[in-house]
Image 1: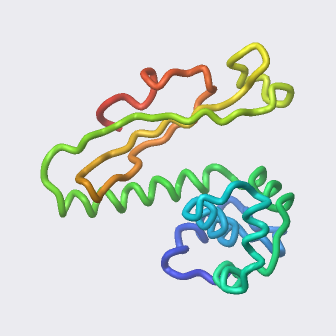
Image 2 (image 1 turned 90 degrees about the vertical axis):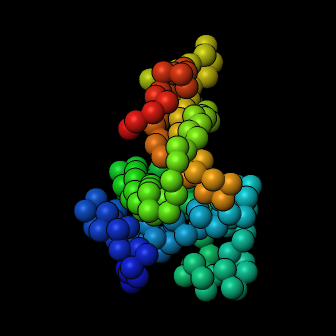
Length: 172
């Protein structure tokens, strides 16, 4: 994988976790670029993301000529969450170190969560209703000023957990 400074931490994590050992086409770096594109452009799903690669400029930027929705789905299942967690924490650290130099005063912290549904048959451990399973992404956001908002901490729990029990209102 050709690595710029921006992707140095990613490259290290991919190597440590042997994430791309047998990967030919959809490397972890390319996958994350696609997912970032999907987030920024509010892409509706994996098929829409696959279709977006019909654009020549996007092909050049991503380094991928085409990819199927099923290949993206498989990569979603294969990606090591430790890689994503490490990148997330590194980004939070970078934001915090910048903000500590630039802004004085107390930030506003908000806790929010999103429930991600799962198949009850395959994920019995995540049962939260009679016929449903899921996990909940709890996120603590820091509002420094009107232009600076960043996620400070994230935690994934079974969906039955309440926000009040997660992340705390202060500290780590």
